[in-house]
Image (tube, rainbow, N blue to C red; front, side):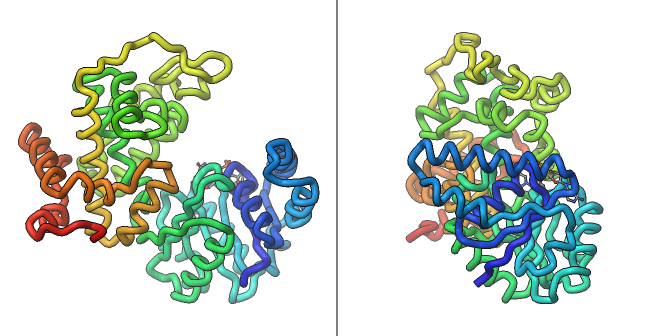
Length: 389
Ligand code: NAI
């Protein structure tokens, strides 16, 4: 069992990952090349653990135990005895490769070197290593201590033992693992695209305003947040960048085409909650200022159906392309982005006839490749099959 863990980068993700590993009993060394970031991480963990005590989730001894399991180090060399190192530094291929090359000169040949990248390929990062089969993607969601899902991504070079050991370790840390193929967006950031993209398309066509689309997803679909609230929460700059990255990475497949509306929001600096203005305006407490645009109750069902079927189609296509198993596809969306139901289970509930007919209706209306029905859904309709029988 892996006990000694190194984490590189003590920002948002690295500090959360260190907390998760330390809580489960690993001895963690957290390194960042910016000393202020290391100090900030230490103070932030202290605050987070104190809050957990206030909420009666942990006691004083547990706080001390977790804190004692983390040491904050100022040189990469100090990670030399690690059995697993997870990197969560800036999203830049050259910098990640450089850090991995240096790290490899310190650690033993048995050490697993993992990346938390969201958008780079594991294959490209691994290629910098002398032993590329020791490299793997271990992709946490923000905030890492709270989100149940972790995507584990073997690159084409990754060894089976490295995969098995990574999956076992992350499960021991209390997480749900979804194994994903090394393709753009992995599972969640690929399948979730229509949640935003189709909502923006409906807005751009003038079918409904943001409040109505959000209401449809919440009240009809049971989603905790509507697409526009969520985009404002994530940040319209961050969300636009992910959309554009996925679109380019898929060789400009129209299914992932970004919206000008989103681009303009980012350009204008209407980034959402963090700037006080996005699709909504926010007061000083970060709450939406109501009554700016009213909800039209008329087409809530059709709005929800359209976004849902696009999500189902994306999930079915990911399964069709062997990105992940059906169970992992559903777990990814319920545990990574809190969807109320797995999309493939939702498809079974709606019926394959419904799914294919809705997609074909959209295609007939627009004649755009964006609305092509996944061949897997068509095949399943014909054979009267379910995803989970
Ligand atoms: P962040 O900006 O909060 O933290 C990055 C940290 O890495 C900073 O403290 C910085 O000083 C440090 N760093 C930069 N270059 C370094 C180097 N050469 N050596 C050592 N430390 C270095 O970034 P965040 O958001 O934590 O993202 C980190 C990684 O995790 C990225 O690859 C990102 O794509 C990925 N990710 C981010 C998620 C998010 O929601 N923020 C979710 C999942 C993955």
